[in-house]
Image (tube, rainbow, N blue to C red):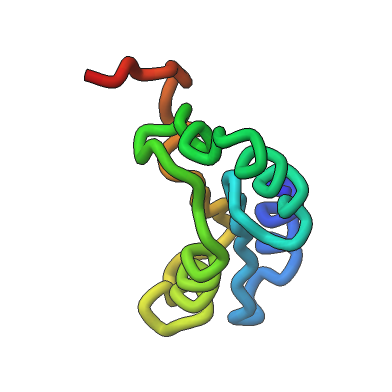
Length: 100
């Protein structure tokens, strides 16, 4: 996706069209519902998303907010980029933190 966004941004050079992509982390959606339901049934919901620095999973509105920002004039100079919305997982080495 990142290469596609970068290539597409260059293909529309000079048109004013901006091309970016959003790379979501673990988000509770219809597609991931079976995973979340299974964890809840086992009493393991607190473990979902524990490997990222925010120690939680994301919700759809967090992805939507990134999309709204990209569509707004506030990001008018952002082009050919991958915006990662994953709670910091891709910026870290996943570890399970011990509870105190």
